[in-house]
Image 1 (tube, chains in turn green, purple):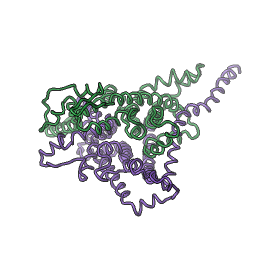
Image 2 (spheres, one colour):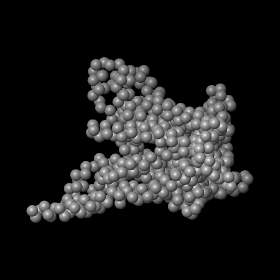
Image 3 (cartoon, chains in turn purple, blue):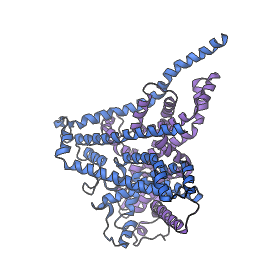
Image 4 (spheres, one colour):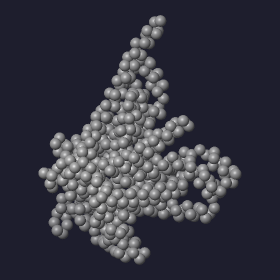
Length: 285
Length: 308
């Protein structure tokens, strides 16, 4: 390994440069586009020398898009707020429901526990539309269609299996002896869970929560099927915006930038947790 | 004597709560998910019915007719099956090769390698639907940078997703952009966790590096490769977001993979029976795949625990 020939070093350098170019270019390009006016964007050949403008972001934030044809209302900020609200509440609910269940699965091998855990995991792999299409009709009967409650409930399908499986793995790695010693010392079950198990599994819970948030934020099909315009998150909202605004490319780019910023920022901020969560969820369980 | 009676009392209370506790703890999570199981059963029932929203009076059980039609007089179904398998096959193969290559390039721990692997995480964090929109802007025939670049290399009228000939290629490209980092991360974690002794021994003996790669690295990495492949296969055969956001299944029926076709059947042609039958078949495919996967995964976990 230490004895790399100059030729190999050049090959590595070129290969890695191409890799970085391919994966980073779209992000950089759309970011630049979001600061351009439509006239700059439509220039041929494309240029990276331009005087940046904040007008695209201003239009999105004020919700008013003034064009030569008239003024257009954009509900994009509402979509952004919907994304924040839906993802945060879904993950919070998933943690409340999932962490105790993960603890039960890890600590107490009760009858059918493996079966139940697998059933929950299998939700991760079932085609979402199989459940979603009939669910539209049930939601109409139950009065849940196009409500936040209904959406948050369905979002549990994404968040819950993820949290259950990752956190369960962490609980299994903690030796039960510590907890047993604490119980023998006369502490209640709940105190043991809160004071010993939870803090020890803390990093795992953080990783799982983070991953669940990103998955919830990035979800598209649930809200596409179940939510109308004023409940839609950014993923669906951005697509609708593309259809309605047509040729306002600068605003579309700015909308995309605003929509992906939260998950990208989270990823950069907590990348170690994230990598751990992804590899654990996939390999170790 | 006194000490045993003292210790028995809390112990018995402990045992009772031990029995009930796990059920109490996991019940809420289960209830939430069981609510979701009901529509699953409903979907299976719909798939056995002749059910069109446009002709509500004609709704009745026709048992296997929807499935029978798939086999014998529904070219649309074979198109869906073909495109879904093609899409999954191409994306997973390419992502695996690319992901393995990148993981090998980044294997050595250095500051620059760690930095690059964090950067490569970013596409994976972008919602696939939004990634599709990004690429849609870049492949716009009027001003898209990729259309411009294609023009520079002599492909003046390369129409990316708007031509049936290149639509598949375009969505595959987006899929590769989003999901290769996933495989890369798993394989990089795998590579870095391999024991060092075999490699040191091989280096001492002057074993050629291609031999080391095919006879030591690859076999030891196989469990990670299998896991990553099956994970991606399950996602890829169900791909909806990228394709729907990019082309809505078009042009024509060029990209009507399972979930897109079922969505269009349900909401546009309102043929609920056919839509449900499509989803049941997709579910059967993923069930077979994931069962293989879970068995493999369990074995892996046991081996990992045994060694630890």
